[in-house]
Amino acid sequence: MREQLEPLKRYAYLLTAAVILFVGYGYAPERSPEYAAQMAEVEPLLVALNSYEGYRDLLQQTGSDIAIEIIGLIENSSHPELVKSIIEVESNWRVDALSPRDARGLMQIRPVAGMEIEPELTPDDLFDPVLNVRIGIEIFERHMDYFLDFHDTEHWALTAYNRGRKGTFDLNLIPPSTRYSRKVLGLVT
Picture (cartoon, rainbow, N blue to C red):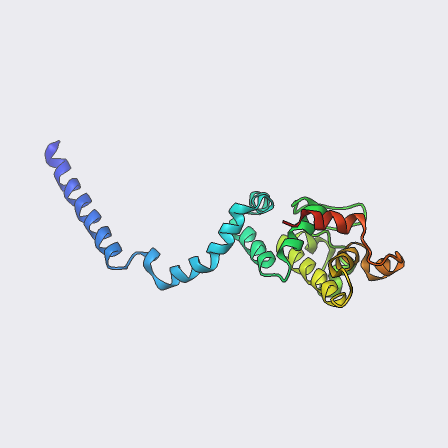
């Protein structure tokens, strides 16, 4: 029996030595420049994932690849804290959220609003969390740009996100500090 183990031991030692040499000389994938570049790109997103509960909820629902893509969209938007707060208020981070007014997904996009950004969109496409967040960020940033010169830009843009621009102006409030805009801004850290 001992004689049978000797060749296996020798093979294990050789295999271990080869691995040590490959790692030592930079042949391991972790040492490649491509791997280092990928990790440098993903690392801030992983830090964000670990520091925010909403992202962890998202990860449980979608898996790592989709969650990291969505986190990248949010973190690279012009107003990441506001976008996270909008998602918290709108859907509580539920990718399958559906409102009585037919708003869908994480950012509660109504099909009519989504089709202004993506004309070929079908209503059920808004349940794709990546597409939903991309469209929601685009809509919100358009409102921020539109109301940029207004006093209390955030209240204007958030109210427009919630009610539409016409609905915002119909309120006749200056600034339109609504329950919705105060709730979203109250969540911003």
